[in-house]
Image 1 (cartoon, rainbow, N blue to C red):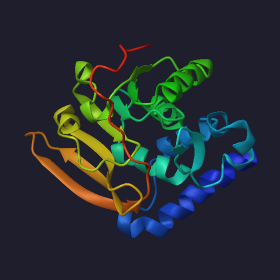
Image 2 (spheres, one colour; image 1 turned 180 degrees about the horizontal axis):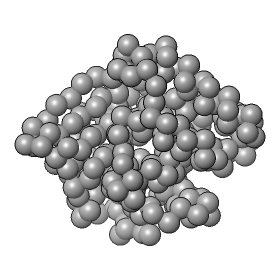
Image 3 (cartoon, rainbow, N blue to C red; image 1 turned 180 degrees about the vertical axis):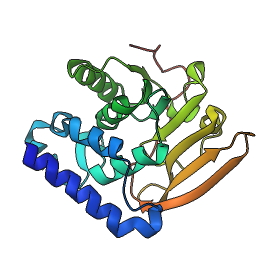
Amino acid sequence: MKKAIRRMLDTIENEVHYTRSLIGRDVLDPRVMAAMGRVPRDHFVPPNLRPLAFDNGPLPIGHGQTISQPYIVALMTDLLELEPEHVVLEVGTGSGYQTAVLAELATRVYSIEVIRELGEASAGRLRALGYSNIEYRIGNGYAGWPEHAPYDGIIVTAAAAHIPPALVEQLRPGGRLVIPVGQPYMHQELMLVEKDAGGDIHSRDILGVAFVPLCEMPAGNGDAPRE
């Protein structure tokens, strides 16, 4: 297992090197890399795919969804520039893997999933692994989670057709939003959106990506929050 984790971390470092001119950094934050090394990625994939868990590629997790490749998880986390006291909103719990990485770095993570079966399974998985600083919700990610706003960081793990205004509104001044934007199965860009101290918005493209689409839930079908 240790060898597989080390191989994954080495691959992430190599990917950073190859894409450094695009992402604007030569290395990722050592805290992010340490978090990637601590989270047991093999617990977040179907049993038959566990031999592939630490390979640098996405894997299916059911319901037409995927767990993102380790490099993209690490990069998106790094772009948030999290501090230990930060509060984060995640849109798209999915398998819970990205959620766990965030929970290693931030004081509190609020995570929304539109697919009930995925959200409930991931909540149980994360609790079993001992994560106690995460709150879960089944709901519409486009609307965010305004009750706990503003957030120091917001991360979206599926491709939106546009940057949801609600998420920008829920971002704290000085905060960062990392989101893939584009049409399903076509060209998408991973974008970094920053809100400065005066509330002005600045955005830039980081990298071409391929994510499953961010789905909307009809109004009234969400759940109350769950610890």
